[in-house]
Image 1 (cartoon, rainbow, N blue to C red):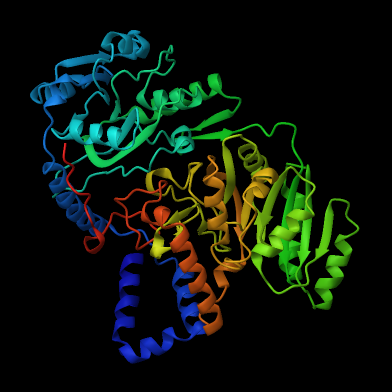
Image 2: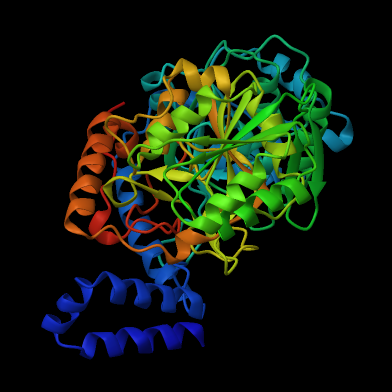
Length: 568
């Protein structure tokens, strides 16, 4: 019904003369009203319908298959060694491999007491080793494309995309994966099969893992210094009866318990591991909240933090950027009587980057929190989770799941390349929607997160020089900051367990006033120039997914640019 209703609205809009539509689009008030009305109606949140998904899938697979089939089949495929996990269905996999001339196969049956370590030793790694689950089927070009990815990325381990059905006339269930995303692997076991390890690179360790997913997690947690690569091709067809997900997540949970100090809780309904990294010694967190007036927003924000937050070792630094409303000034004055709240005046013109940099100079905490004045706490453990991530040595910026006032997604990670710049993953999706590959439920790595609620170590903030107040006064300063932090060798994280409201953005006007539009375009040009490599390929996103919308749908026909057929 919602789809029919939305189609009706679109038909009515098309009946309006083009000249009138163009005139309306020039009105900030009318365009804002229209977009808000559609969003609040619940008619759409961007996920394509089943018919559209089927067409997108059919168009994509036909082109994708053509690129794969144009790849020469390497003669080295006969030397490939394979370990098949699981007994039931393994005959299907073995038959497929034999037809391709692969005969060096070991079937690992954990239920019968077989161990991965024994299987690895038995193969002796004189050639590349492919890991599959029982029932999986590979293509003739799988070896060629995965081996090429190993060489091109100077990697020791590569994994590929998978599907349940490779037939172009029948919609399947493609898993279009990001580049190596360790926190996503721990949370959701996004890599379950189709893993190749280069010859001679099996780590000399006693493996505890009983699954491919667990092995990936173990190699990373035990710091085996193996470089991971991703071949963005559908090279493995999984069985429709694939039931490896739950066992893989349980395996990862056991690995986490053994090789880290984190506490993992498996959510059987969501099929997600929720992982709490310890906030050792509860370091002081300085929450910086810029504002100009906005008494009611600020009051709701501060009261929700004080009343709902379980993590208690924090201070609030309210930056007053030239407030002139009597009621706001009176409220801000009253805050000064609270011991862990500091009100500091910043009288200059609005510059989001400069205001937050100024706030950090007044921060006493080891950890900085950038908080918009329209944020409201939902889950009491939000700061506990975020600080636990932020103080990890290999983590930089940590962002939260932010909801509009109506409960739909405002922020769940930033993807570079959306609209030629950057956008928010799964924007406008319902709060409890799992998202693509459960990526709305899983804590994971993104290249950037929004500064509306961002936690980072103070030393890391200072190391990169804070926000860019010269070139990015208003827009994209958080994206630029996160990427500069990432370039220091750490990972940024979207923490799905931290949920907060972000109220005002849902009703904020568009930057279409001439001076605002000019400033926005300058800042967008800066982002596109400085971070063009990330915009061309965001490692947290798949090149097989669209950049036209923020909904993780398959690339559409007009934007599909299949990778060139590799020469092997």
